[in-house]
Length: 264
Figure 1 (spheres, rainbow, N blue to C red):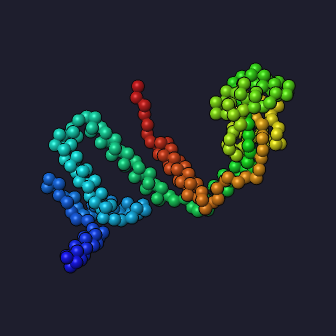
Figure 2 (cartoon, rainbow, N blue to C red):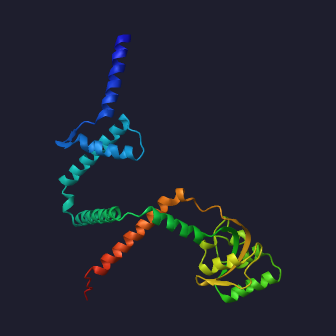
Figure 3 (cartoon, one colour):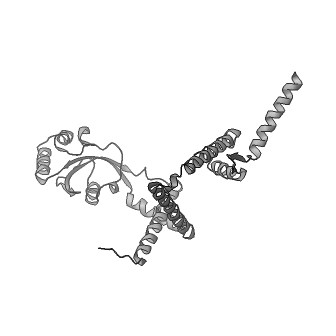
């Protein structure tokens, strides 16, 4: 009995080892799903951080089998002959080609580390060396802005005035208070300039006009900037931004070179 259990155990271990070594080809109604096709998908999944296991190999094989079964049925029903299906296939093909073009351009035109570092420093400078806790009252008209400033001059509390007049639904019920510490760079330019000019506890006695409305801003508190990420943590993000910028520039150049005629 113990010998039999040992043989079974060795068989299971061998099966597991073989499963991890390489998948086997499968046929579906005579159509072969090669071991290479399965292995390619498995390697990509493992590259993305998932551990290779017999269960993973089984999952990949089953997904490919299901895909083949469904494709065969779709072909049997000649769905590719339908106009809407044919159009969708062509659109998908076009998208694949365009994405390949963009990926190829990005590969041939890499962003230099020095450019990423320079861009990071520019963004850090624009963010500023201070962060603020801010309250804001937003109104639509100059007349309403005057009502707000008059009420504040009369001694009404900023929070009460915000609840009464502000049209900013995100802060109105909080007395105008923005919950998080933030940079003045996160506001419209004139609003950011006003924030930087205020001392803690002060508000803009002259409303700031921006984005089609009027803003009365109070700086509740300020501190040395702490939230801007370090270069090591954010360099991939900024590299991607520069890559996207290059791609968009290339697309614009292709547009400009193209002979485009708009028909009547």
